[in-house]
Image (cartoon, helix red, strand yellow):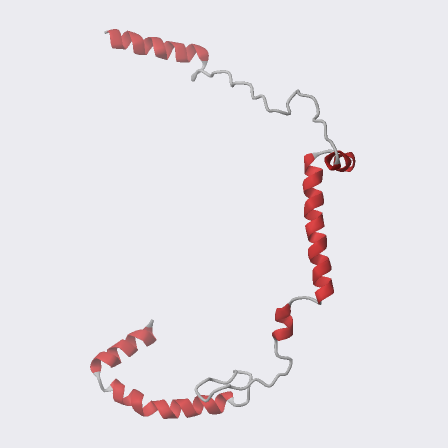
Length: 141
């Protein structure tokens, strides 16, 4: 009976107050809230004469870095990777085992030679049922 009285009292209070009881939030007092403006000295005072807010200083620093990077890129003529790219359109294989570029005239010849050289071994491997099943599974996927 005591439990019912307590529950009903809590339910009655919730209905009267509109549900959940709210508490007042504590007041946040940051160091700059309501206080006097800080007094700057020396170079900081000179800087703050032109850039009074903190976000002005941040934007000035970011702008300075962007300017330095731009001047460096302009002075060096861009990146080193651009100079390393080959200028000619003739691309050939550096080794007999390497495939030539697909843009090269030698690509078809190289593919035909490699196909003809590997065909007897492939036919021999296909006689093995386990290899043939594995190959069929790889082609079907």
